[in-house]
Length: 299
Image (cartoon, rainbow, N blue to C red):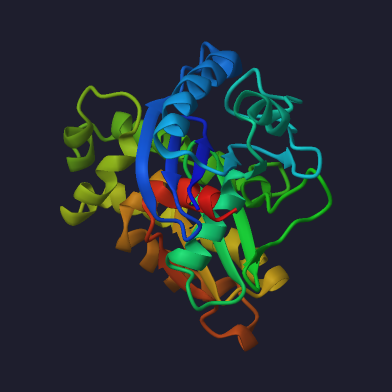
């Protein structure tokens, strides 16, 4: 049975055709037109859907949306990244233009399902997922099912406070927050290896962290240490509340790779009750950018 999986994110959109096991057979990927907002994105989605449906004759559609959704009503609660989505009846709209059954979910929940069933969380129960991209989101899968709180809330790990003054995980550990920290550091240290790697580029500076770390750049090491400590502190709350067997790190920041994973795994026990030992298994995403579309197929 062929399905369509749709990812609607803050920086990219993906539409895939695939099967009920999450295997992708066709794909369309495009960047978000933030200025055009929701209406322009919907126009492009409708255009690409027409081609995918004609080619693959799918029987249903799953959607992972980048923000809180009301899954019972099939509506978007709010988009923190792109204007023109808040309150939008996404499920009804997609059904009207395709005639197909539609299920919608928050994108972090959708990715959490994919990693739990097909990725780094396989064999672990419960399995937690944290996405560190344009924003920071989370999802929890228990017995193969996504955990939901009262609508429209989800596992909003990105909005956990890191201090009483109000700094959140997203303020310090999202991709843009790390980009900002790098820019501030290299302005003060213009001769460090990280500054040489970034050059005059603006946006996406975090992608150079791995190379700078391999060059033993102390500035990069300091930035990573701050991020891993904040993430470990936040994930200690996740551990105390949900007791997951595994925590999978996803999103663009997970591209830092093993230094990020190892730093969190090493620091997390400092914030845990002694009985938890070293805590959950800390894993890097196996599905990468396919996590949301694979999860959308599985929905």
